[in-house]
Image 1 (tube, one colour):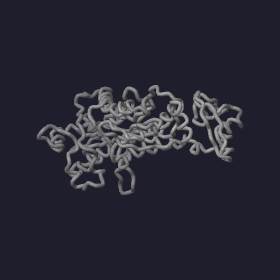
Image 2 (cartoon, one colour):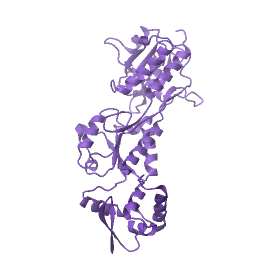
Image 3 (spheres, one colour):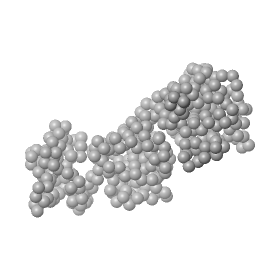
Image 4 (tube, helix red, strand yellow):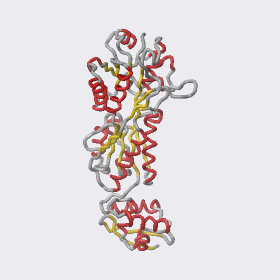
Length: 385
């Protein structure tokens, strides 16, 4: 057994090895640099030049260096000096049943794309109840966190910041922007604007917009403003724009729920004593629906058919997210939808989290990716009912 010492972030750290097992010191000797430089280069820290990083990586590969072999010893040595070692692991906080929705699985794939490139692992964690975090998180076994929670992100962030072994580590929130965390989102206001403009160009003048059941969040208000802006630009009265809240979470996409029963469930919240059917029949000027998401759009479509209406002849429908499909006999998707680049958003969140971990920087950064409109066959000029 041979023991060597080196510096990691200014701390003297011992690197013990058995014969034949390469160490940081072996790489440092071959490259003519310090072990601290080797450690930073292997972590991808931006403070090390690209040329030096390439030389270190080449030497590590030539020597057959495996960082996992030394991780536990390195963590122990650094903790003795009050420092933390890199775990190469990120915690992902997700809602229950996230794996059932194409929306969240697309984001998940994007995050994994980014982490795999950097050889980081992902620890999937359900949203904590009452602020209680898993010991894995509170013990410092993850280097940062990503949240795809639709709400209560501020409470999650407070719990993370209060955890002694997580503290100020990087946190990236998807969709929900909260002080103290970086964020990645889509320009949903422009997405809603494009959807409304498309409907207005087809000749629709009164739109029913359904927003999610997550509450009156800034994100939902931006969608509403996008529609109102399009109506103002078209010379339409934005106050004739109806906005109602979705009830539930697209039950037609729930494989455990009987479709016949799902169609009997209300889609959006109306006044007491008023049903969705009576709401629409009392307002024949409504000829188009902008749904909260694709699942809501599909539910509206099937429900309208059950009520004797046709899509798009009687009602045009636009979804949001572009994750679900309504197929025709030839297998083509008919649903017009606002496309959020979900996989790209997940990839951006993963890259941002890793970059902040490697650079030991936690300054807030915010990225907004563009939303687009995929026009298909669920929209058409208004017909005569």
